[in-house]
Length: 439
Length: 196
Image (cartoon, rainbow over all chains, first blue to last red):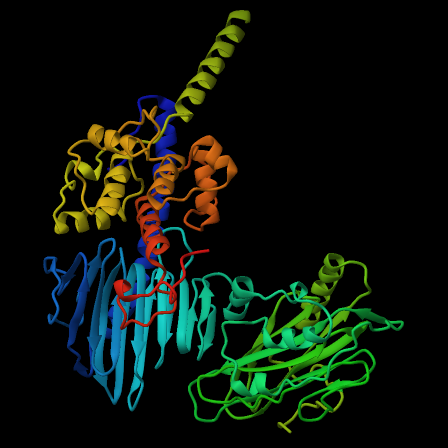
């Protein structure tokens, strides 16, 4: 607080005192947050049980300093310098430093940032790395071949666990903390303690406080199908442009979308609405595992028709389609299934949900999209062979305008989600989807 | 009784006047870093940036020094007055700028300088107004360099450093898709689009 100079007037002193108190409060919070990220790993380093790893600086661009320990002086970083636990870096503008820790860990600190290597050791066949970044942007690649890694990036208030993947962590100024998975899955713990597993073969982003990768991806990359020309091409376009981007979609997805053309001038029957209605499911492995999870999306229309990739026909009389049975594909790849009424859809209550069919546990996200607009919030949860089914309901109203319909549907979807929590799969048995072991 | 009431009213008026005058004054930084860390040596520059990042406020002098370090790689001016003149000559500060060295920098003032440095032309109003702070702030918000701001807000040290980092991302592209093996100078613009 010595940097503050109160002005001469009494009111200004009061103002300065108030600001000083506020700044002290904020500083205390920041200190506490920093202490949380620096002391927590330190507790684990007090009795390291393993072989300490030695890293090497492999590239320096611009102004970079390194400090080999907390009590050591800052010095210019140079290529070839050896570093270990306790080493810290700081960079200037237009600067970056890259260092590697064996085996296969490459870390780059970009411009105007600081990072400290809190822990670097090999123990019981695992590589354990902890790095703390006060601010800046850190990129971290792990080549996972033949070695188990347990790597974590700490920032004040959040943590990113890295497992054989490429990630980027950004924390600076008033911008929200952002974790990006370039390749592979990672786990992000936010300030509020919530944990999100995200990533795949393509880039996925989590912004702190946003609620998860799918919500972030929706906000950042949502493709509005209403901008696409209506008619025969729409169905394909809807499905070729996944609304939850940021996940990886395998080639089987796009190659299986040979849908029949939709009538260009459909007659709208009673209790139907013109437009598109899409249910979209995306999932990723809960944990790295060779047993790839196979999840299935099911939707029962207000007419009682069932869309299910394994139990139902690919097309139902009302026009709904379930074109793909995605069985999980390759490792570190998100799965996706879609049920869609591309041109007309029945009005009323839809039951929809997810069934875990086989393999390891999975985290999923589900969205309902009407005419290119998301109905309510994305819902999600975890499923495995024990808790193998979640179901939800949504009421799709008449053609009284998108906004009004969206709001009423939103409330309905949220209520249904709360009525059928992820951990109570038996709460709402629907049709053939009775509780019990996977089919 | 009457004199007591008059006396009370006078005190209330005086207090109101004092509060109004005092409340409108800009916050000041007692010991700007530029007094100690204005050198151009890399070690001095790094010490300046990372000490500033921990400070609760950024002064005009610190902001202008930092801006010159970023745009030129060094600060050729040896005083606050020289920095202001240099920035005015580049039209990064308005000709009538009168801010003091130890006053907290205003977002509007800095926005004009950043728009000039990044060659952000802006929309019709900004072009017509000659990069008025009000429109410069809006342009930077649109470019996602600034958060929602008013022109008279100020920055903490960490926020100012974050803005400088964001300026670099705007110019060089963000490393949002690039693995750690690639250093920023090796990033092709097609790999890493600038902020929208």
